[in-house]
Length: 209
Image (cartoon, rainbow, N blue to C red; front, side, top):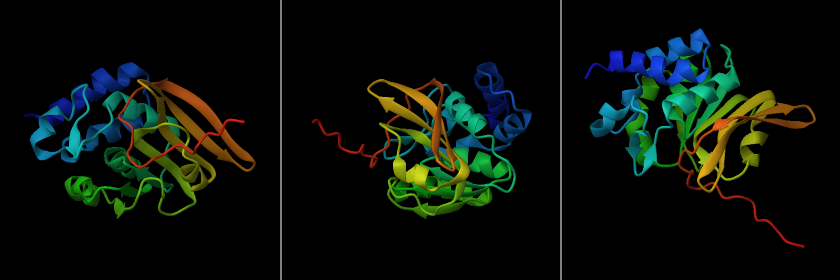
């Protein structure tokens, strides 16, 4: 399979047409070998409009959706980023000049993606998803969905930092961007999307009075 041609087709037919117009981001997507983040026997599906399996049920986010999240965070060279369950997005951020840590909760997933992340200059760590490793990040991004805003992730942002994630309840979800200000967080909805929910992210209990 000609992965270079498939990568160009992905950018042309799934990214550009969905209002991801930043040429620097497009160039990064063209440069990062998405097939290396899939299970070896699923590499052929890396550029399809389908979720490509990594390991143990974990999948890569659809190209359209991950491109929109990456576009929203507006990464700048020299920034720091935490890619939570987002190995492909982490590699793209590194290509854009960010210093990236990729956090996975499942060693089996990390075993698949670690070689590509190492080649991209991305550090890796294994820890539960609800325990972000480090603090003061300019960017946090996730390729999995959460039921509600993960406060621990927001708390790991620096002032001015951005969190891009899909919030999903039931079948439907919305890509959202949070920005940390000095006095709190702003929230902006980005697009409709429904990636699989992340294991290990539990909403805070609601109480009825």
